[in-house]
Length: 422
Image (cartoon, rainbow, N blue to C red):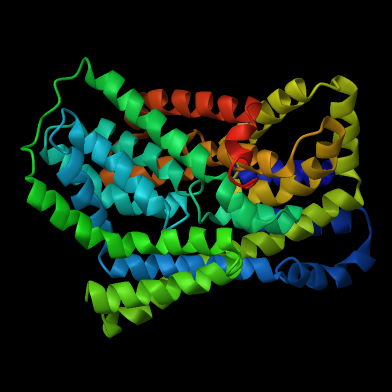
């Protein structure tokens, strides 16, 4: 096992894609331990890791997001936010967060959202007089809302791996997502007290209502998803298919921006993103199988129980551990690997699995923006041409408030469990 872990660390430091790191480490372990009989079961494990009905929601929600983007939703979300709050000092920074909040209810991926909004909002904010590092930091921080406000790809993966209802996870993410969004707005207001940010002209009531009317069809997608799950009309997976249908109707017949010629690109982008996630899930499954074969989860469980029997201490240790993991590993890969390790511990400490799902997903999402391996940092930096150093300097206030929100959610379970309990 030692050889496997050393190989894992070396491959990771060499910059090998995480999916291949997981697969290669497992193969190295098999040959190093001379368990050659396990080679025959690797293909079966790869397949069984993906043989889950709940995972069908991932490509469907990806497809819905691509359809809505091609249908003109992004610019309408930004426009309605501008009309309502753009006239306040620092209004475009608020617009950035609010537009990201609404977009998060459709896309469900932080990296996709950061990439999209960095192209849309940063040039707009820069033209209005905001510094490029601050504009980029605001956009990257607001992108964290993507995996938290439902529908969320990470919630789907957690639900599949833990056996928790994906619908309950979606409901549990609403309040934490809105709380994080509000915290970003507050920190922007605090920073703005010292900065002389520009003020835009206030839109007329007529323009506000016109803009709101245009965006309502787009917002029908998350409303239909949440209402359908709450009422039991369809499951979370089925809601993804419904979202695709609604996205086609809105984009093609209401906004009339979704053209037949754009469908091949929409499908290819969905296929590429789905393929990346699928191979990651498959490889993480055989890596997790290796850990289970060596009884690593049981050993970690015994070690943590020996440290303390207090749920408060347990959750604190888990948060510290997850923050460290998130600094060096992709959040989705880490989530898939860590679920089987931590799930057996939850009954011992009396931690609700839905509550724990919110903790682990938010924690690993924050890792998207923490150096040295934060993918969100590099995406935002490469698009806006802001150096990583300048970006981190402007980003740290957002990371601090995100950690405060994480601690609040960790020790006030009701914030996560109230909606699923209705």
